[in-house]
Length: 166
Image 1: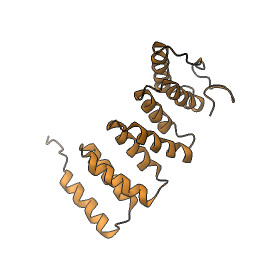
Image 2 (image 1 turned 90 degrees about the vertical axis):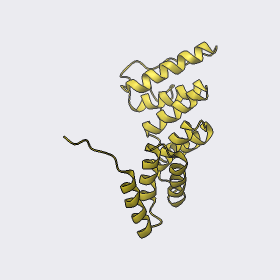
Image 3 (image 1 turned 30 degrees about the vertical axis):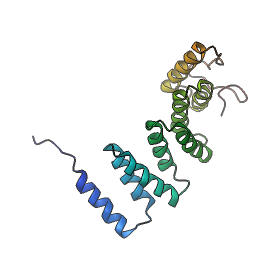
Image 4 (image 1 turned 180 degrees about the vertical axis):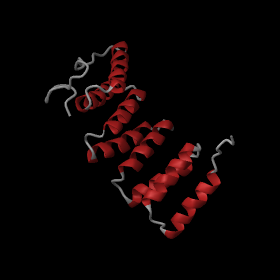
């Protein structure tokens, strides 16, 4: 059996040809940005994502990808800004809420991280990832001398007006 090999040069040629035909294609820029990111070419990925977002400011997939890359570069405020934009457009986007919570955790802003994880759990009460990330953030907050609000029991969403309600 012959192994399958990745041919980034061919993929780039496809994207370049598509951009020659449609230079203002936010979708092509987004996809090429994702390819560049997967190859570790963060600067090129960020440039393509910036262009895609300039063309379509409410392009939530591009905003989310740029936020994740900003976080990888330890540019936490830029990442949070992109996740904020996604959440403003899609308040029930649990992926963006989790990504923002993860970024708040990296900033050691555990209370904000917990609030984001609680919003995820209000939407998806059985989300094990959000529940464990919330517990970790609460433990870090406690270790820093703070107090986290009690979590809703597993499988149960917070009631409107309580901690964790959307």
